[in-house]
Image 1 (cartoon, one colour):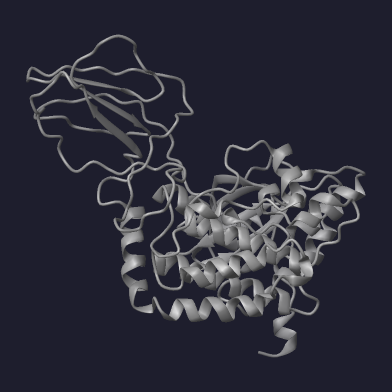
Image 2 (cartoon, rainbow, N blue to C red; image 1 turned 30 degrees about the vertical axis):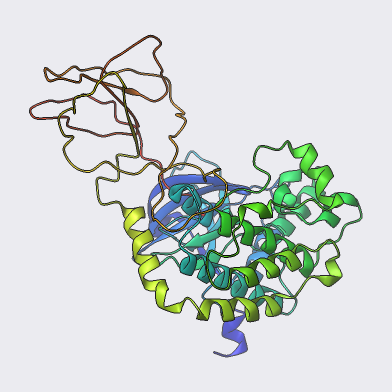
Length: 430
């Protein structure tokens, strides 16, 4: 590939090449849509970029940098989008056309697993993210990410990690300066921001800023948790410059070979002194050695996680919880089919245990108004079926089944239940 091909400008993609727009989420820089490109015959993600000054010049200029390919661990930018999402009444909008990542983000994976991934997969993710970031930092000029976090690392069908949203923080900050406004969320995510960014108004981002974020990201992958979960943002903003870091007591270094080396790397990445942090080239040299020790287990780990993500029951049964009333000692009739695992946030239950996979999850908190559906069987141990968003007081008998986003279920033989169908939630693509 010659230099001209490598630095070619991205193609402009318009509505006449796209069909089936479907909104799949909102990112820090705008809405995200999935669509099918009729010419390429493939699904793509359209990330609309919102700018206060309404100008597209900065998008085109920075997208040309982001368009540079060469790493399988950096999200591919396929082109620039200019259109109205297939609706002539909508205003003209612009954004990025990106490859569609079917398995969502690392953040979504940790929530679905309710904890960390199996060790071989976790080590592979750590290495692939380091490789992607090293590629961005090796460009001339270097391309800083400035918002590296689990939701900005996406996964393809084989759970290969790819970095997205690189360079967008700088674009957003430039645009906000043009309008004389500032949005703190556009400059990075608080829990992953380095201490120097929180203690000086004269802070200038550097490669060491991304390395710090990588260190916190490693902690999230190892523990399956969000750093400083439950802490108020003002306290986090105050304590990080004083040296506070995510809780290391949640990590048992004896769990697997190589973990101690990864934790040592993690701590060096979030060093208080930016000058003492390693480069990403140093990081990948460490993660490569660790990954070699777990190479044989990667295929099994990927297969197990994919099986869990795809589900060996109907994926529409998103969240089911069954609890038996202690007063009922007789076993109820069997529920047809196996019960699906719950999809929820990362577990908060202390030290991570990867001996059994997948792990049980805590129930979801519903986002919809309460509805109750109730049916009793004629067999011992009556069933009361109801949405999780409503809890009835008083003594009740039987088995309680709480569920959300359910398309259908059968209890026993010749029984039925009517359920209100809701739109299916999808992983965000960023």
